Image (tube, rainbow, N blue to C red; front, side):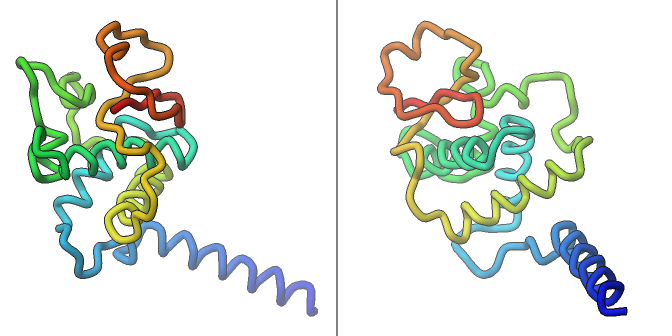
Amino acid sequence: MLKSFFVSLSILVLLAGCATVGSSNLTLPDTQYTKQDQSCLSEALYHEARGTVDKGLRAVGEVILNRAADPRFPDSICGVIDQRYNGACQFSYRCDSIPNGVFNEPNEKSRTLAMALTLLTDRQEDITNGALFFHAASMNPGWFNTLSPRGQFGGNIFYR
C-alpha cells in the first residue's frame, strides 16, 4: 500500500514537472527584457545549439547578449539575431530555407525557452568571457584566426 502511494506520488510529481516546462511558468517576469526578446533568444538557441549540453546553449545566448550590449551591434536581442553583414546573416539559421518558427523537437524547444529565461533573469557570470563570435568546431573559417579564443562549449568555439 505504501509503495503504491509513493509510486503514485512520483507519477504526479513527474506530470506536474512536465506541465510546468510547457506552460506559461516559463514566461518573463518584470525585467528590462520583453517577451519578444525571450522568444527571439529561445528561437536562436534552438536553431543554433539545440542538442548540445546546457553550457553550449548558454554560451550561444551569451554571445547574443554580449552583442546587444556592444555598440558595434544592434542594441536589442532580436536586432542582433536579425542583423546582416555584407548581405550575410550573422546566424546561419536566418539564411536557410527553413521557416524560423518551426520547432520539430518539443523537448529542445522547452530547454531553449528555459535557458533563454535563465539568461534574461539570472544571467550570472558570462562563461564565454565576453565572446562576440562563434562557429562550429568542425569548421575552420580563416578569419577567426584574428580573434581571441574564449573557449569551446557544446560543439562551438567562441571568440572575442
